[in-house]
Length: 118
Ligand SMILES: [Zn+2]
Image 1: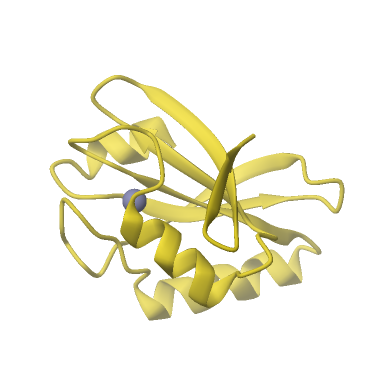
Image 2 (image 1 turned 120 degrees about the vertical axis):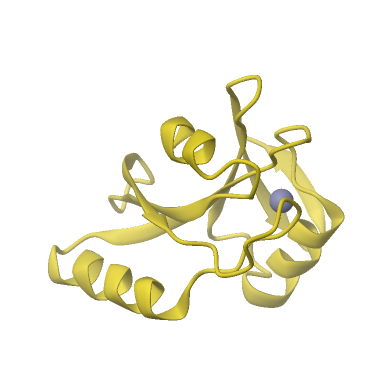
C-alpha cells in the first residue's frame, strides 16, 4: 500500500483491501484514481469492475478501502466520512488511510458519521 501511495504522489492513491470472512486483510489491490487529485480519489470504473470480478472469481471478498492523504494525516477527512455514510452507512468496510510522506497507516470504521479507530 505504501509503495503504491508513494508512486501516486502528489495525488491520492486508492484500492481495495481483500480478505477473508474473518476480516483479516490478505492483500491490497491498487486501483487507479480517476480523480488525479491530491485531495480526492475516485476508483477508475473499468479497473474497479475488473478487480471486483477477479476478487469474486478467487473466492475472496472486499473487506475495505484504502487511500492516501499525500499532504495530510492518516485519518478520514470530512469528505471520506460523508462518502462512507452514503455508500457504507453500517460501517461494514474497513477504511484505511495512508500518509505516504510519514509512512503512517491507520484503519477505521465509519458508522453513522462516527469515526472509530481500529
Ligand atoms: Zn481521504
